[in-house]
Length: 392
Image (tube, rainbow, N blue to C red; front, side, top):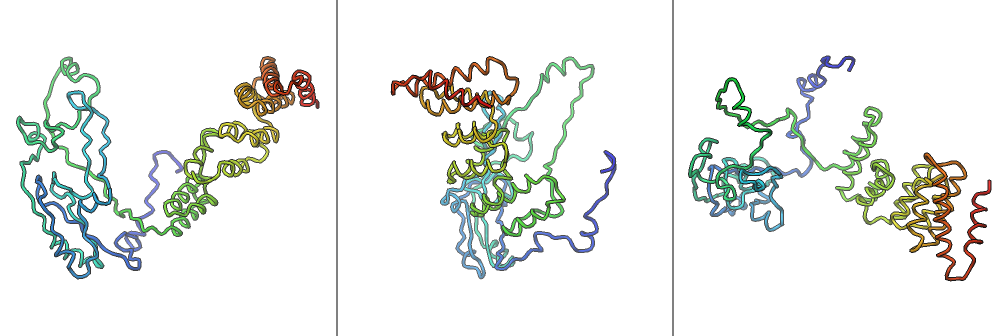
């Protein structure tokens, strides 16, 4: 884009008007089946029965599914997710939208049955044979009718037909203070975005990964590309491949520890030590920055190795010496010594004399605990070890 707001031109026109557009209906993979949805013909009714026997016996039909089949497989309805409140202050009724109608029809066109066949023609013919027996119920078709006194309830859980109330400020105050007040009644139709080229998914994992890889060089967001490839492979059950090729590149947290935890959530069967080793390998020369992560997940020997491999934050190491002095004194001593080592080497952010004293004091405390059971002179031993640590 050369100028903000400047029309950049359309790039898809030539492809579409010359017959090169690719639509879902143009794709015909081998052994592809076709489906037709049987939809409700009434606006409000109870479903008494759905007879699919004739449809199932129709030539070319592979299956006919109803709400009972989904219930048997434990498939839930779509949740509503509205967190607003009703006029009485209670949370809005969480109306669940059925994938296939179970026992109640609330709108013309609701999906009642799903017919799968070898061809589209066979699916359409079988759909005509599905018999849906219903018992009509009172219906409302407009907001005015729904809000009328004693109007039939669309949902039993909302007898006044008010799903929720959304408001900001006080409408009463605004109207009272207005110089002129007008009343307007308007009808807002249902609006849906319908793409010219509908989206579809074929489940071709290798092709999807290859497509995303081809975007490298054209799209600077390498992390997003790796993330999509990883997600596709994980969904296909190819966990090891996803980890080996994309996990490290795709996983970025707000901190080293957050990155590690994000990786653990995606790969719970991986050994913690292996995950950490792979992450550390991505930051050569900065191994010490993974000290806190190793400590937090209980890899104490690895934490000390990392702390001594390259500079780590002395304050973090000092806190480790303080927190583990009683419960894990040997680790606390090594953490304190690492803190002193990097303080002497002038590493750290806004270091003061208090930081040096804290590192020394916590290291000595841990030494006393470590050697008290042996009757050893912790002060003498500690002074010698600190002296060696502090030597240039």
